[in-house]
Length: 183
Image 1: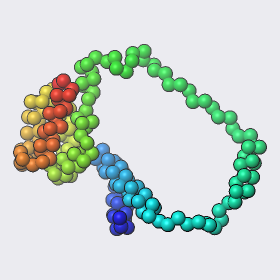
Image 2: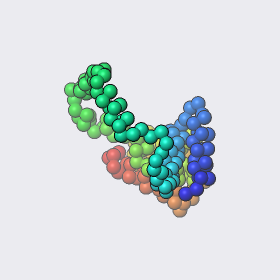
Image 3: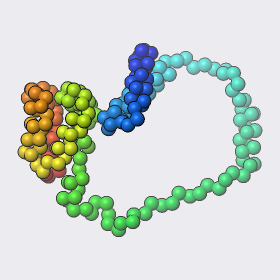
């Protein structure tokens, strides 16, 4: 682990956070960069020697006195959190099958690594084209119609190769999406 990677991640986070409006993919990138940065910094912290005798550290007696003072001063009463109640009397799972299928989204079936691979290798990091593809798949009524959409708006437009790993991943996700939803 080196500081260069930390600096690079901070630079990427700073660059993305400077935008006024973020796309979904950019939010996911920020989250991913943050996770990696946190992991790297945690690793660095674990390698630091423990320093004992830090200056200005309160003594046990000072901590005890401070705690006793806090107990003597009455604080604001803590309000109980209200219980959550459903306005609609139907249980969440009571909706008709057609409505559940209609609200399902292909995005829920795409893992973060697959998303980045598909976006970068098939759409040249064009998040608008990627999102258009997903909306078209969501709007498709069945697997055949989704394949036609992909063929027209991805395969032909970007000259994809059938044997490319990212193409196979996308087709597999779409196949699972339609077989899993019963569409």
